[in-house]
Amino acid sequence: MKKILFTILVMFFTLQACKKEKKVSQDVSMIQLDLKVERFDREFAEAQPEDMAKLKQKFPYLFPKQYSDSVWIAKMKDTLQIELSSEVKAVFPDFKQETKDLELLFKHTLYYFPKYRVPRVVTVISDVDYTNRVILADTLLLIGLDNYLGKEHKFYAGIENYIAAGLDKNFLTSDVASTFAKTRLPPPQDRTFLGQMIYYGKELYLKDRLMPLSTDAQKIGYSPEQIAWAEANEEQIWRYFIERELLYSTDNMLAPRFLDPAPFSKFRLELDNESPGRLGRWMGWQIVRSFMENNDVKLNQLLELSADEIFKKSNYKPKK
Image (cartoon, rainbow, N blue to C red; front, side, top):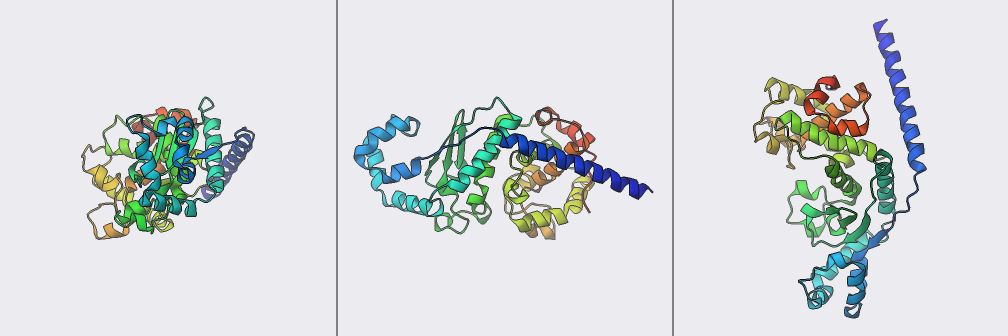
């Protein structure tokens, strides 16, 4: 009898969730937004020296005053710059799909944050500055397209594999969502491992809402195989954290082991090399998801709640 009742409850809540998702989708589709992406990377690549004044007038923020026109004219003729532009054009010939993805992201952003001002979106070439592949400054969004050419690209030959894996256009919209999330999530004041896990969990849950059509792999920057590994080992990961009393630890070494970008997570066990990095973030995500499934809380409220309250009210239980 208890099993039947449980099944009925699960079906009821699943149905309610589906109804809510359908309503959100309908409301989002009614939001008017015609996103225009300005391809500065193409305009600069196709420009001649005599076009400099026009370019500087249109994109003044991309031409610091301390540099003379001769610097930019030399860059136009630079063989490496020309090759970068050619490779970017090959991967992003029209940017139509990416524009649709970004438009949908910003429509969801406006749904949850109605006062948000959609930024001016400009694509650039950043000389493979992958640590700053997306820059959001007030109402300006710069996207360095040379950071999304695919992990096997020759320009990434000297970059470690776990970093190069994220240099793919499949992660472009997710990176933009992460940059936005940081404007809504102040750095965690809670120095515990749990506090940091929940911080990243909030960021990833925000992506659940802003990127509902994207895969979990795209949201966190994993491969499908890495997602499968995390799901298959969720109970073992959680048991490891609990048995070693890591949740409320303030040990600074836990971040490089389980939160920071790395080739793998560091359990100091034989399975380390099989695991993806940043598993602490993934676990924080599952806790936040569980909290939102078990509590009637709006997205804005979630962002303000403490890690401890989220954890205690989440009723989180790892999937076996």
